[in-house]
Structure formats: structure tokens, C-alpha cells
Length: 115
Image 1 (spheres, rainbow, N blue to C red):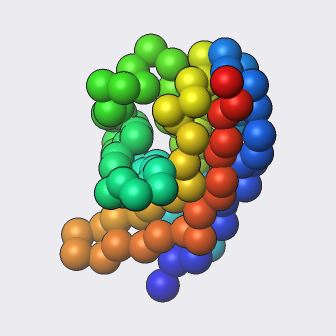
Image 2 (cartoon, rainbow, N blue to C red; image 1 turned 90 degrees about the horizontal axis):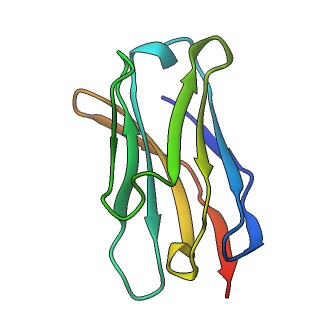
């Protein structure tokens, strides 16, 4: 069982920056593939960025060049640095951990980008 706790959401003006953190419990963090998803009102949850246990990353086209995902295995934490934020980035952001068939989710953190 892995517990994920997100932090760092909030309100920011368009063009601004915000950093999210996700802290994971347990001792196996380093072997989990981690990701950030988001869900806007009335829309399906979508992948924003992912980082594999080996460090390779993947991004949604809509955030490439603006968002950066990283992980610190010593701190059991995955980060999402969001720059040049747009109103369409407004959503609840969820942290995700995967290992084979095991999938865990955080409770989500609200990010609101004002125009």
C-alpha cells in the first residue's frame, strides 16, 4: 500500500508558475513509475506528465516546454514544475504511482489559473 499526498496547488495568474509536490509513503518509491494527471470540470482525467523508475519522462503535448516532472528517490517525492501557466491548465491535479498492476492515487490538489 502506498499513500500519496500532494501539495503546492493554489491560485496563480496566467503566465505565472507553480510547483506541485507529491510525497509517497513506503520504502519502494524508487521502483514505482510516477505521474501527474489532471481533471478539469466536465472533462476526463488526463495524463499531464510521467516519470519512469529509470528516470525517463513523457509529457502531454499541451504542456511540453512548460511543465517539468522530476523525482527525488531519497525523499520519496515527485515534483511538477509548471511555468507559463494558462487558464486551460486549471484543474485538480492528481499524483499517481504504478507498479505492474498496482495503481495508487493521491487525493488531488486544485490549481486555478486566472486570466
